[in-house]
Image 1 (cartoon, rainbow, N blue to C red):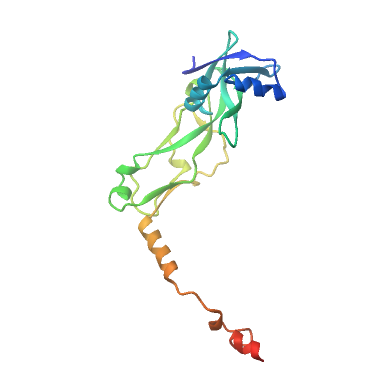
Image 2 (cartoon, helix red, strand yellow):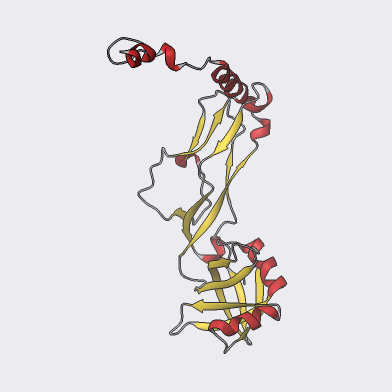
Length: 222
């Protein structure tokens, strides 16, 4: 049984009529994975709460008009202006089969590192999420990486530093184990560099020689 649950009802309306459905506080959705896609709808607030917690990585128990199915979120359409959820696509899955899910990568304990406490370096994260494969019950909510040992400004976290939970593997077998997930930089040094660049005197046109070795104004007088 999944940690998250959502009740949905079957819908008949499609196309332009979905606007009326959304006006009533419902979100249209589709469940794939069976013989045919199933058209459904669910209450907006309840759906939003489940999506915020489950994301694309945690299985959800869908109560589809009394019939229960296990699924994960496949896609969420967001209105670019209102930022409201417009449509949700679910993928029906089996509890016994390995599935693929997109999982957040979370860096923890950086504040406890010498890089942060002593040298006041900052951390920049290049990879925010990774696709993993596992049975639904084994899918992790997030992939944690401990950054407490970071010290030097050239220290970095790479793919091979990620400790995967039991039963979980990366979906992309060709992913470079040395690909950078997060790295350090020195904010103070960056600020000094920007100040130095801002203080550099601008080069005036009169100081730049023309192709013939003369200044621009000399060439223009000939």
